[in-house]
Image 1 (cartoon, rainbow, N blue to C red):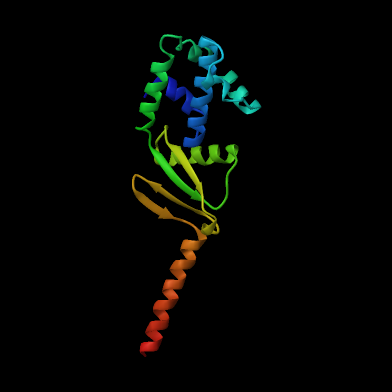
Image 2 (cartoon, rainbow, N blue to C red; image 1 turned 45 degrees about the vertical axis):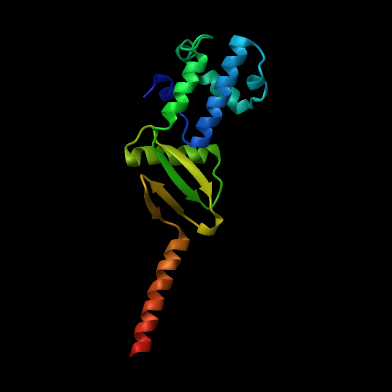
Length: 163
């Protein structure tokens, strides 16, 4: 995997956050190399974004110059297609700290250091989570457990009726 992408992924757990960070990085470099451009003017930096940009090592910034910036970002977009994504349905919208904690556990659990979360809110889950990784769906929500119990009760009720 690209060294630049690896650096970004060290503290980026979600697909949405990765896309956001790539946008602010691209905006930063376009502004630095070409002055104010339409792309660089469109993104306002939050304190959190600014802190993240400052946390990147100097060696990271040295990889970019005005001749390769577009090529690097095109390559990063292409590499994103090869990343493993864990689709995660939650009954709530996690904040960034919670998403990062979930991401860390998922990366260790699945032994995939570049795993990204694609989090969607599904209030119908009631509690728990449903996840999809490599086409396999696992539902650990209270809604799924209640549905299992309902089916068991329906089956027992039919057995009793048959007696």
